Length: 472
Image (cartoon, rainbow, N blue to C red; front, side, top):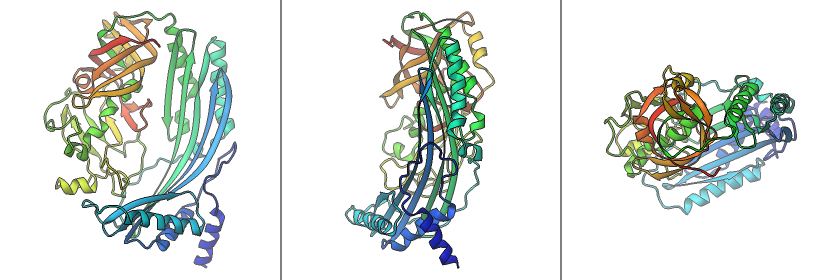
């Protein structure tokens, strides 16, 4: 009876691969048994010494708008099956999106064939057996069930608001969910399902713009009208922007801007980066490097974070204190780097094989109790920054970045916003910036240019270097 049920489940999902679902994706997903059956088939077909299977089933839907009009609604379901084979100390990976028996046999054979032609890896460790994971709750049924009409109603309201203000709105509203399974021939089995939603809006006027963005696993936590109103106010407040001379100013970075600046240090806490002398923390561990008001963790279990409770090999993730009151205290380790450095892995390794080792992907900054309004009120002369973009690293050891402000940059004088200003390019050391943080806001879930998840406060930073006025 059990074998018959398994055959029936596989029959239901045969041929799913990449499926475009049209306008409505609510409820389109594989069951837990479906994904496990696919993985079991691959493990049965594989002739490698060890085999690992990772499966991601993703349902994404997006409503796009511009010129105060919805102009696109897309929805897609994708299935990605990734197989890693180990053969005589060698390892390699192959992928497919097909689930018929022949395709599953082929991907298992391809992974083994690729591994056979790889050099032996002296750092390769045996695959993990079953692990214990702390539960995380990142799946919200209402987000998974969101329809195009749900998104369209919200977008229509903000477009009407922009039109009434004689402004132009553009942006996206997306919802979706992901199912992930990781298993191997040693008996490890891990599953994680999560939902995701995001709203981003830019409000345009002739010579100014405003922007706001939020994301959350719970679509109910996103209020498009509040975000649109904020972007609208910024666009209106920065009409006829003044040109301010470049120089060093007190900078008030809203959380999105702070994320894109300080988030760049995430890989510097990689043990592999430190061993390879590619980290700004080389020769700086356990020394005061940034201000005493800066504390930083990596914590996938934080209520404002997202992510699976395991890493690329299935190792349970740990909460790690990275900076303690200005002092870098700990790195994160994959299994291989932990063995090299004679310590324990922290569950931050990437999927193998890779050249990067590990990194903390769930940064959580300690916050304060100063609102952006308080920061403005306490500033004699400074610059308020909504967001940063086009960020590039200039010098890695001092962590000097360059980039530009965008969509709401303002001059603050005598505790008030006095005018909008033309955008700046900045050249700024992140370490120096974090040494000059005068005030911190409450830590919130950030939404900026960076793709990784981060909990970060607004920051008031003294002596921030705005190097030139941009042409934008």
